[in-house]
Image 1 (cartoon, rainbow, N blue to C red):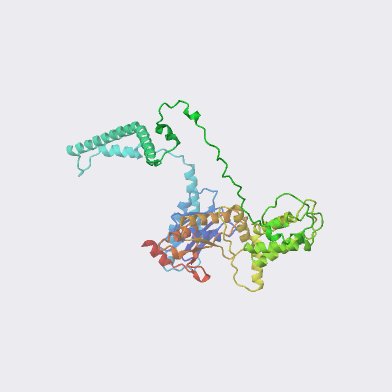
Image 2 (image 1 turned 60 degrees about the vertical axis):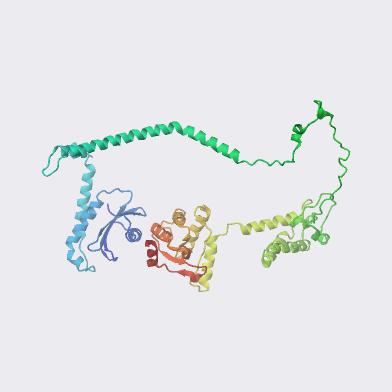
Length: 512
């Protein structure tokens, strides 16, 4: 059963339409036109939202015949139906189509029903027929046998010379196959020996290439004593009679002082007593580092701003020295002070540990990914609407197509804010890798969306287009895969460097 059948011109004028359901199927036909017909894809079927659309072109009158039905149904008569309905429509309205009189009412309902009934009946009859085996008369083998037995007039018979050439060719081919088999067997026999010989030669080359230490004429080592010994009647245990002179051993030993290392705590020694709560004596050596200035703060009292302000001043200077902006460093210190004010220190708790943990928690919260991206974008759009700003550009750069949490957040951002345009930004330099990114982005937007019709990529922005010379293949690949246009190409670093795509220039670069 067909859900939709329509006839329209290539200019977009609907001549006649039939629809068996109450659902609006215009989006399905528009998707077929945009993704298949305009793209000139080599297929006559297209699946969209559970429907299977099948079309046929009439190039003489520039018409398109489209039939749509449920994808789960396997209708074998649709091809025959489209062919028959095309002929019926052409024959009935040939004059109107030749004069392009499209804007008049066409009474085609009865013809449509009769053609559809005939096609359905034909499909049922074809499905009931058992599949028959091909007879011997219809096989290629039968044709070869019969044709070899029939003599036709004007046909030249093969001469003895031709038969001799054919036999010679077959003999040479057979000899060549035998020779190849012999060579293969010979190779399998000698290949292990060749491999061993190659390994042996390689090992010898490595040993030869190793450099030996140079031996000078008047040089020598303790190993050469035996060969240089010329003593006559030397006892066999001569080595045991030799006693080394140890009188001067250890006489040159001195006491070298250790290097003096400047501790990182020296700059804080002067101010240490100003914010000490309780400092018991300890023989444990001091450790260096940023938080060593708080090593003496131990107690069990409530902290006040007066207790932590000196430490926070040092902390602020340290953050600024680490290239943190001064206003940001002040805000971080204020945040730490607000969290520490009124906090009770235990007997073995120190201000160093408390301040370090508090600052660490604050920095982790700042740097961690976890902001509600959709909510931030919503607030930005609301602010733009209140201040009468026409355009809001939401940049989601840095999202990897294989990172599921980031792609889910992106899908949620699109669902909540419903943007008018979703553009994919890719580099022209990476070529086929950009195509892979684009396909995975589109699939992620479709898979992670809860809408029946998810908002996919509407267009492409191709950056660094001025650096690829005539290698413009990425532009063709990306537009062909998605069926979406290239809205802008980037030729620089500013907004004014966004240019419209020159189609003729791209085609010329591709074809030259």
